[in-house]
Amino acid sequence: MSYRSNTGDVASRAVLLTHKSFIANLSWVRCVRVGIAFTGAPYTVRQIVDYAVEAERLGLDSIWIAEDYFLRDSVSVMAYISAVTKKVRLAFGVINPLTRNPVLIAQTVATIDEISGGRVILALGTGVLSLIEMMGITVKKPLKVMRESIEIIRELLKGCKLNFKGEVFEVRGVKLGLNPYLSLLKPFKPLRTDIPIYLGAVGPKMLSLAGEVADGVLLTAGCSTNYVRWAIERLRSGAEKAGRRLEAIDVACYILYSPNETGIAHKVIKGFVAFSVAHSDPEILKRDGFTHEEIFKVRDALDKYGLEEASRRVSSDMVETYSIVGGPRKLRERIIEYVDAGVKLPIIMTFEPDLGRVFKMVKKYLIKS
Image 1 (cartoon, rainbow, N blue to C red):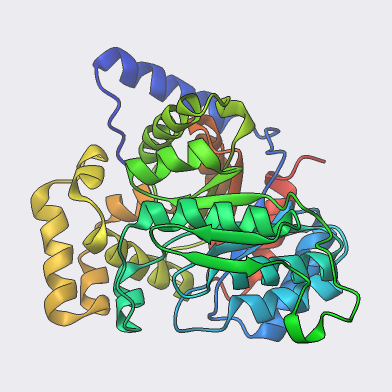
Image 2: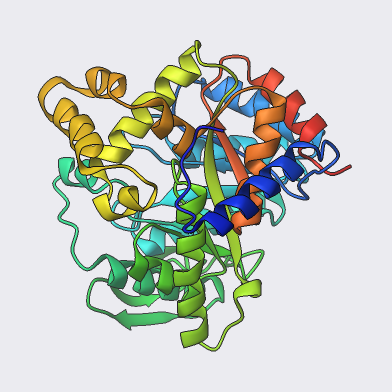
């Protein structure tokens, strides 16, 4: 395999190569859980809903809807999916409490949870800061934003009448199901008071916070297996700080996938990787073996010429490190490596036009019967 691995000494490399060879021959190995992710493009709402129904039929664990500005809205799509599916778990990943107030988020997830019969997962995150700033929103104290949001949402879902004054948010006498001018009506109560809350985290402090207060962590699309191992150690640190066991925290990860190197999915993934490389901490990229020159070449192209040119400067090693490209054998091998690194729930994110073909591969090679 051509993707890079910062594995250390020769002995470690030998062990890793042996492990890769071992994995390649395990055609029977399958994951217990696999999710599928959608965002606001390229599929229409009707297509997403149809694919969601098919994903449930094939036995996928969960359907994740990302809220990428300024595309199709995630909440509207999720409401539709929740009404036409019966068993598959439904995850918002991520919703930003800077663009949707935590009180509104609590109200929203409680409603979708009611529609779905108790299948919702909520993942909170700050998203892409440059896009948030395009809406005139200044991002300050992101750790406080997330900590306070989780506390507010949990208290409201429990049915508490909440008075809260934090450094970022303030809530004055809010109780879910109770409206001052409709208080003579019977109030609604959330179907579940313990809707799982995950935290979308990238940096060490946010990962530690996830270990401290969240039910799970959602690792970003375009991360490497090296990064997964590094992230889990930060997650462990936060868990230990709060007296929690790492094993009690779910580790979900968006994994970019294209079945070939010639289609639109591969082109979009190269663009995604280019944007990610240009906006990521260089130290994280260097741990994956990339030089300052390689990183700057992509960043400079994005700044001067745009995403298409930047994607041309993304090397095959970068694509291989931060995504999966290839047929069912390659998909299986690389997913297993992510699981081996510590991912408990791999979530496939693809832009492949024929998503049905990808579903069949996932069913045959990844989902445990």
